[in-house]
Length: 184
Image (tube, rainbow, N blue to C red):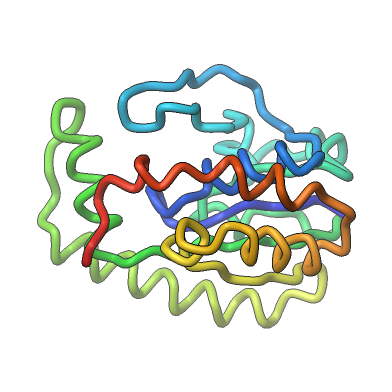
């Protein structure tokens, strides 16, 4: 079984990867994308994920590990493997503000409503698709809930994954000061 951490960009997937690692789960990452001002502790990515639709034989190596897969690429997971998806949700306004801040100097800005509608439609379609996948079990966690009650979140994830994880270590990873685009 492969643990997949997923969600929209800027939804808390890197935090969940940190928590899983602290809890004792090995991660499948390539350590290429380094920490920066937008993700001070790193991104926890494996660039091969971007090409899953064309090349996925390597994915079997991630058995017993956690891998970060942005939600738009979940459709490319091969159906001959079993997955448990921890899906991170976050307030859409927070996601869009965080994304705008991150992309301000590196990419042209897209109209906020266009991205919002695209993301919302994607989440609806993905939820339907996930229900139809026999090889995927999934749970959702709200980013705010993880930050506000990290021990509860750690317990929920460990129960879902049916793994003995170090819950205290997982909870201790969470730093509320890094929740910078919080909508009150």
